[in-house]
Image (cartoon, rainbow, N blue to C red):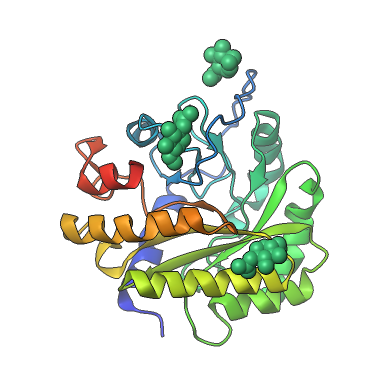
Length: 274
Ligand SMILES: *[C@@H]1O[C@H](CO)[C@@H](O)[C@H](O)[C@H]1NC(C)=O
Ligand SMILES: *[C@@H]1O[C@H](CO)[C@@H](O)[C@H](O)[C@H]1NC(C)=O
Ligand SMILES: *[C@@H]1O[C@H](CO)[C@@H](O)[C@H](O)[C@H]1NC(C)=O
């Protein structure tokens, strides 16, 4: 079952992602960003690029993404930008935008956003495999390719079972990592889901797992209780860092009322970046 909170979160993301105009002109950056000097797995998932500097000033954030094909502004130095092909709405601007990102130093590409959810990228596994081959596989060898990001739903045809069906059609798509999202109630539930994701990835020969959205259900609309969130993060972050096959993760999300209050790190933000 998909919880109300998951649907709520999904709707929220769809709204924020859609707020970015599809036909936005792409500014070509002439200066190549330096490759990151920090091997931290920790990232910033943002809609508003001006929020990233508060997280990045900690020195513990190495990468960022915004569910979008281009970064909409400038990131702090030494933060790797990862472009994402959210879904069909971005096909038109994709090739120009991704080539700009790659020539500016991006080393990875993220696939579709929750294609297993009707409120999100909403694709069958075989449709998604076809689109992946058209839009993302051509960049194999120029970037490392990450799978569509699936939810933690355990309903048949969703979550990791959607991914397995997708890989049935996309075994030659050049994918090197599995991306997953998680919303749930406890740190133990989270670890158990990520362990399942690691073993699923390993069974397809993928050595990377990216957790590109995660939060307690109670925090999906913003941090509800700062102490609970801090305890959750203090439990799962060292654990994620210790999982060799989890190579990148980003808490949901780098935004006001989540990791920030009045544009500065709040208690959750301090915990996430320490
Ligand atoms: C990189 O991030 C880690 C935390 O993940 C931090 O302890 C370390 O100081 C950072 N290193 C640099 C060079 O910024
Ligand atoms: C890139 O690295 C060089 C050499 O370490 C440094 O001088 C420069 O300021 C860096 N540029 C950015 C944008 O971080
Ligand atoms: C991590 O990935 C490597 C390479 O795919 C694999 O050999 C190893 O078994 C994986 N580790 C776990 C815990 O699944």
